[in-house]
Each structure stands twice: as C-alpha cells, then as structure tokens.
Length: 314
Image 1: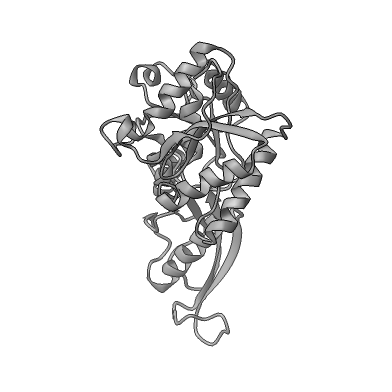
Image 2: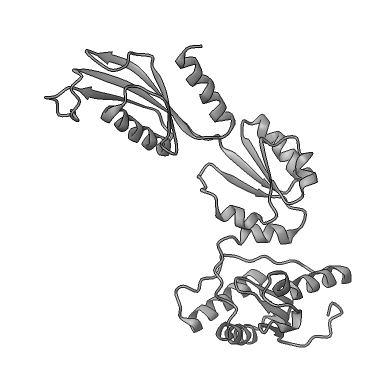
C-alpha cells in the first residue's frame, strides 16, 4: 500500500471519529523541491501531522496555514517560494516553488442529544438521514447501550460538568430531550455564577417580591446560582415573564454590582394537581441537600415563606 493510500485511509478514520484535520496535497511544483506533486500530509487540530511534504521551515509554515484554514472552514491554494530573492521567500534555498492545496476536514455539524427517550431516537434517525453527526449524552448506562441511531454515545451522570469542559463550535447544536424538566434546566444552567445565596441578596429578593406584588410569592429557596419559588397571581396580575423581569431589574438597581447578572428569561411550571405540587415542593426543599450544601433541609438559611397562603397546594 502506498503512502498516499495510507494517508487517505487515515483521513477516513479521522472523519469517522469526528477528529478535525486538514488534508494537505502538493498540487504543483516548479524547480527543485523536496516532494513532488501528489504528495499528501494530514495536519490535525492539535498541530500533530501524519506524513510529510518536506519538513523544515516550509512544512512548519504549511502546518500553520492549515490550522488557520481549519478555523475558517474553507480550502485554500497557497504557493510557497523555496528560493531566495523573492518577496515571498522565507529563507529556503531549494530553488523551486510548491503550490499546496489545504483542505480543512471540519467535523460534521453535530447534534448533541441530552436524553435517550423516544423523541431522541426520532431526532437521531432524522439527523442521520440529513447528514448530521449525533452524539448522545445520558445518565443511564442501560439506556445508552441500547440506543442505536447515535454516532457516539456517552454515559454522563453530571452533564452540566461535561458541557463546561467542551470546546463548542458554531456548527454544534444541543437538543434537550431529557426525561424530566429538572435535567433540562440543569443543562441550561451551565454558565450560572454563584452570587445569590447571601444575606444581602436574600433581603433584596424579599423586598422586591413584596414591592412587585402583581404575583404573590409564598414558599421559596435561594440557591447559590438560581432561585425556586411558588407564586400565584394577585388580583391584577401581569404576564408572569413581565413580572419576573420587573423584580430582576429592581434587584439589579438595589445591589448595584455589574458582576451580578440574571440569566435572560426564566423557567416556570404550572401546578395542575396536588401530586404535581407535592413533587415540586419536595424537589425545591431538597435542593440544598442534593447540592451538598447542608445535611438537612432546615439547615439552609436562604429559604422561607414570604406570604402565608391557604391554597391547597401548600
């Protein structure tokens, strides 16, 4: 098997594994050069190479230019002058010129599926038909093992931590189809900063909720990077999202700290039955314990009941 055949097989393996690289081909030559037309080399995103087109300063420049095309995502035809006396000379004295075709092999547009239920299966199958690469992230090993449509699969008990460790590209898409909304919410919250669980913010939140009283806040818990609460409409309520925006802005004005920034939007769930209310209340109350902040629910200081209500869900 020729060297070029080995390079091409390695290229196919790299693409199948989702490894980004650049295929460098000597397209044309003039005069004395280290390699002839048709010679190929692979440059990986890490800077590592497979094969060679000549070595030395010339090859170092090709590697540098290849990595640049990988960022742009477009092929480039470049000529390198390997002789002195030219404005484009870089010190080589071979005496000729090499024209190289740099073809970036960017990772296919990838869909990251969080959750492996029936919706994820349908999405993965459609993505395969459309030419997208699919990557499954799920916390249940037995489900991951039987998930057939994904190109790559990962068992991940803490998807938020995994997300934080990735280098994302514009062509990547994250689709949240977990089995419950808490998991989806946790994935969305990967960039939150822990500035909320302080006495100052606790006082400011209570004051803001009393002042912006188009909705009535009852039970609540303030976590370091998010807030849970139960709310019901007052006699003249406004749209829930408008109300949330109003008290967020009010707190920002009171605290006057540019580093304290609210995440855009909010997530809310409408209580429809007693069982639903009990489930959400238990989940809310146990947040500090699950996060390892306290041993018992009652030990967490940033919780309370702003307005006592006689509604059945409490």
